[in-house]
Image (cartoon, rainbow, N blue to C red; front, top):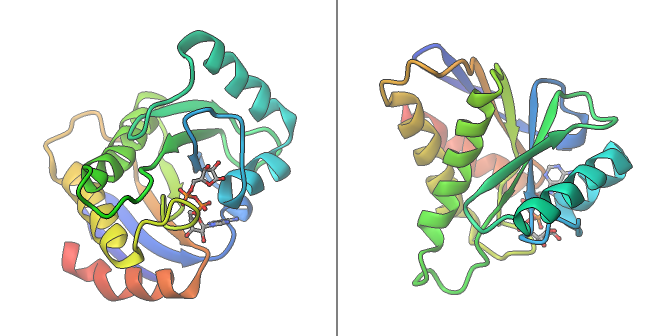
Length: 184
Ligand code: AR6
């Protein structure tokens, strides 16, 4: 495990399955339809149970899903967390279609929403770097930059004390461990 501290917030790189993580908020890499899928989305719904999907369906009814870069919140069902934040990453189309901005927006909107519910801890998967095909190294840069910039803003509302990047693939763990200290 590798860690840095920005202000009062400890940022860590962990490797493993995010569904086994314990804390306030687990972030899901969802799709705009919010009806589940494969990858981390599939794992969260499988382990979390049907309550999460029921709430996703309610959100669909109210607002018709979730656009890329945005985030919505549900309960966490059987997961050992208080909430799941579902954010929708960009599908990689070569980098010229605003993918970096959309990916940064995912991290920002998730952190914003986490603060709105008073969360103290949050775990992120490596959004968009699986099925959505975002290259891992630039995605790591976007994630670390977005989170560190968020924490450096003079935010009176930030209550997050712990932000964990939970990497499922060893090459992502290596990237995050290598680059983390450059964002202190
Ligand atoms: N814990 C942590 N990370 C995981 C886990 C897990 N249990 N399983 C996979 N990952 P992906 P995307 C990692 O494909 O690229 C879904 O079908 C994985 O290794 O889950 O944003 C949605 O419904 C990768 O590094 O999400 C969407 O349709 C990272 O999670 C679409 O896939 C993201 O990979 C979203 O694609």
